[in-house]
Image (cartoon, rainbow, N blue to C red):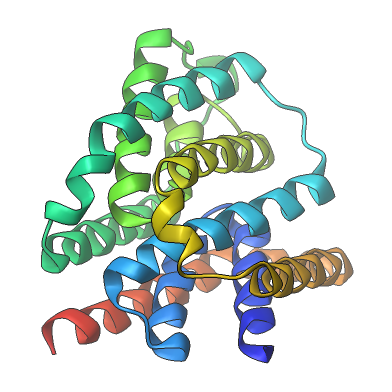
Length: 244
């Protein structure tokens, strides 16, 4: 019982502070604490990401670019459909490699100095949004990642958003794309978690939002370090579960 609250709390904190890394945190926790296989952990992580993202969105109440979010989500749904039947055919080591590669990409993006935006803000072309949405949908289905690790740096570097804008729009896109993937994998998800366990995860996520609001502003400067620790922890845990 307590394990589900801890998982919801920890993942909620990661999502609320960084806008990404929810599944990267959830997958190794599910493997280590609940003794799930990598495949089951990637499936169940969708539920945790959805609940954590929803709670954080309610807490943030961000101003959204609805056109961009809906384009990403629509394309993401197509990506879900294209990849859902392929998930069980892909070996665990391929899934693990994808997750680790995405984590490293996100890590490099977080620490790389971002160019000045403002006047140089790039045009939000529909083709670019569709391609990114398709990739996010495929990655979400195959790996269980919500896509924030990829989406946050993309929104800042390719769509000219500042951190807070990217956080809100990223969480909204992650939520809806993850819900789509969840629907397509409902049969597998329903066998892994009960309603009471889902309620405990939601409760943990709710506590995380309250904690984030209590944090002093200077603590937010440690977002990069927190995200780095999550990626390192996730990478080591997944490598141990698959290759060691």
